[in-house]
Amino acid sequence: MALKVGIVGLSGIGNNHANCYAQDDLAELVAVCDFVKEKADDTAEKFGIKAYYNLQDMIDGEPDLDIVDVSTGGNENGSWHYEPTMQALDSGKHVLVEKPISNDINEARQMVAKADERGVYLACNLNHYFTPPAERAMQYMDEGHVGEVAYCLHKMGFAGGEQTYGGPQNSPRVKGFPYFHVKAFLAHPFSVMRHFCGDITHVQAFM
Image (tube, rainbow, N blue to C red):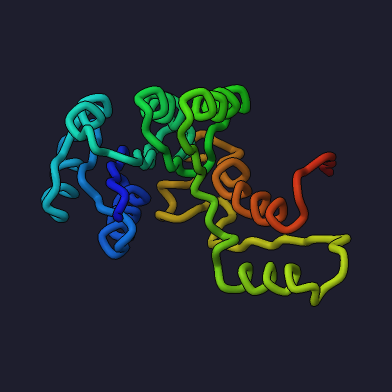
C-alpha cells in the first residue's frame, strides 16, 4: 500500500522529491505546502493535488497523511528544518527531512527525541549510500570479501570553489555564509563513512 506524502518547501529539492514520489508506487503525493503561494500552486497544479500555505493546515486537512517531507530552505539552503519537523512530529506524522537535519546540534537532538517520544520515524535524506557503488561495496563487506576496514577516505567533488550550484549569485560570499560548503555538503561524505565504518568516536581537524 502506498504511503501518503505531503511536502513542505517547494524550491528545487522539494520539487525534485515531488517528481520522484510521482514515479514510485510505494508513495502517493497527496498535498504540497509553501508559504509562497505561487510555488505551492504551481506544484499542486502539475500533480493534480491540493496546495496549502501553512503546514498545520496541510496536516489538519489531510488526516490520512503518513509522511511529511520537510524540504524547506532558509539559512544556507537547509537550516530551517527545526520548526516544521517538530510541528509534524508533534502531530504524529513520520518525517523525512532534508540534510542537514539542522545546523544546531541541540535542535537536531530535540528532533530525534521528539520522534522517539511520539513513536514515529524521523529520517534524514542522506542517500549516497544507496548508490550502486556504495551498495556493491557494502555487499562485498557483508559477504566477507574484504577484511576489517582500517581506513576510509571519502572524496566528494562538485563545481565549487567560490561558487556553488546555481551560478555566481549563490556564492557563499554573496550569501554571507563562509562555511556554506561544509554545512551543506559534508553531511553526505560523513554519512557514507559512518555507514561503512560505524559511529564516530574521535574527531581531528587541521586548520
